[in-house]
Amino acid sequence: MAEFAQRMALATAELASLDVRTEGCTPRTEVMRRGKTVLWRYAREAPEAGLAPLVICYALVNRPYMLDLQPDRSLIRGLAASGLDVYLVDWGYPDRGDSHLSLDDYVNRHLGACIDHVRAAHGVGAVNLLGVCQGGTLSLCHAALHPERVKNLVTMVTPVDFHTDDNLLSRWVRKVDVDRVVEVLGNVPGTLLNAAFVALMPLRLTVRKYTGLADLAGDRAALENFLRMERWIHDSPDQAGTAFREFIRSFFHENRLLKGGLQIGGRPVDPQRITCPILNIYARHDHLVPPAASRALEGLTGSRDYSAFEFDGGHIGIYVSRSAQELLPRTIAQWLRSR
Amino acid sequence: MTMDERFLDPLFLQRTLSGYAQGFAALADAVRSPAGSGAADFGAIQQSFVAGYQRLFAPGGLAAAPPPTGTGAALERYQRAAARSSELAASIAHNASRRLAAALTASGPETPPITSLGELHALWIECGEAAYAEAARREEFATAQAELLMALVELRAASS
Image (tube, rainbow over all chains, first blue to last red; front, side, top):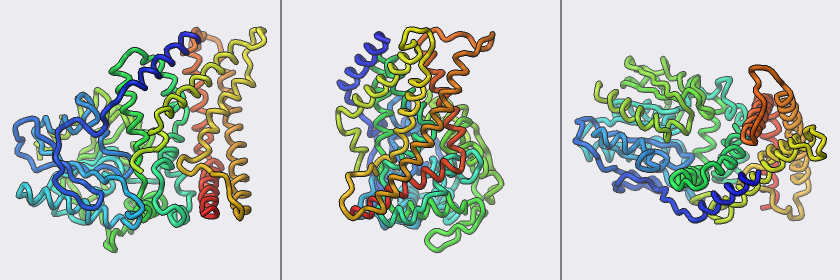
């Protein structure tokens, strides 16, 4: 116990002396901005692969630098190293002035403007679209509303069926009066969402993680990794109230993407209108988006070219694990090349 | 807000880590038999679970501030919701400590003895998560969590 206390004290002191960068590691340029939404273009790190540019649509919750955390843990870097022109849609940090932003704004206007910018910049009619987590759900909606803009669609740890038996988060959320929450709070605090995510596996995600820090004492690189992850976890943007309410009601409460009847901006979102090739990547041990929630995409769309890839890991490991770095960029790039 | 404000406090992580280290020490003490009798103190083990779970029942970003006057009904609702959540936390902790006790006293080729604090801690986590997962899937848990959140929201509404 005394040794544990010593190592914990040492690790804590070392952490206090570290200052890690968390805004991403791959060189990038801001190429478009609409409201808080920024479109980043990443430097290609290999000869051009001759493919349509790839636009990554991240979730509204959490920050997208998880995809470019550090040089040896970067999906974006891996994709750029495959010769892809990579763009990232960064939704930013909504503030009180953004509480009116709706799913129509995010899916049609902001994501639409980003995709239109890339289409114009490259002189192409359609882009490759990679949607991550909730960003995958938004991408599916965009592809259903604007099928002509999407050449190929990759979804990654994306919830489609929000009512699978093993979806703990959904069980809880369905009991919440989201209208009242948004009426009182306006925007929904990111810290509230964080608390809900941690509550899915509370002892593993708090006690085990923090006591395990003692094992990292004296290992600067490991401590830097730990600190980057902590910063990312605590870096949760508040959610624009209107879009949050729409998302919770339409997807978590009513499961409309799967069951039908989903509307965004007054227009029906019919997954059958998605006819482009689809690669659906999900994680076998995902505690946040259970595999069954993602696998529900098969057969839901009008695509005749559907592939699935099951990653042997969890919701976080799919971004940052060593195996993910080796597997995912290669899998995505090869799949795109073959279409 | 650009980042959880707690994380911008340079002492936040240190305090958090200190809290978990103390919890680990309490667990170790409980299992090492505080009275020197050789038997683990399962009351203390249970308390260690209670402390771990109760952190969960105050949704981040909505912590109840000292209520001003005029929030009577909302405050009462919040107190009821908090009490219900504490009941559930205690029940889960009881289940978790029962699981841990059973695991610690089990013997046989598939249950090698615990020989280090690290192994004990891993078992504590395993039993705690198993008990929690069982409870968290129940309707009563979802109802209690949602009611606590809505009570906090109403307290916020009454305070503003």
